Length: 144
Ligand code: AMP
Image 1 (cartoon, rainbow, N blue to C red):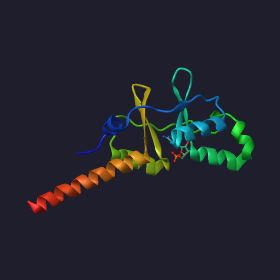
Image 2 (cartoon, helix red, strand yellow; image 1 turned 90 degrees about the vertical axis):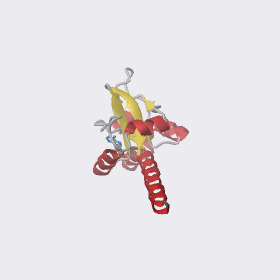
Image 3 (cartoon, rainbow, N blue to C red; image 1 turned 135 degrees about the vertical axis):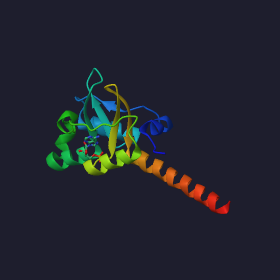
Image 4 (cartoon, helix red, strand yellow; image 1 turned 45 degrees about the vertical axis):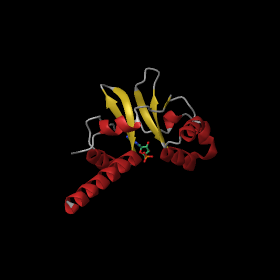
């Protein structure tokens, strides 16, 4: 039985930390640090997804322009083409997308609206749970 994104969201919640495209990279860093997360979804005033900004983007900006980049807007440093998933996506599909795209965050979209976010940590946690449950079943089968 595959694990679906819906199962992950039911367990972890559907809150997504967002910022506006106009916040500075320094402000986005504070948001990431405050929530202890690695990515924020960048949305406009109507809530439409405009991009994703992660720790990696911040490192790239600072490596390129130094401390001055901290006062620049996230809109210049974010990734605009955001790959998303659905509640019906499976963890296998997520791992393929994340590995193929070399990123660790996937916003969930439902009817054009942002409906959650899955990190690679969420996927790993779910897979470990699955492997442990399988091992328990095998042990019970052998013992029985
Ligand atoms: P991450 O590994 O998630 O920190 O992201 C590595 C790079 O991929 C950064 O440049 C991010 O902006 C970008 N990125 C992260 N998640 C996504 C996504 N779902 N769609 C497109 N790009 C992304």
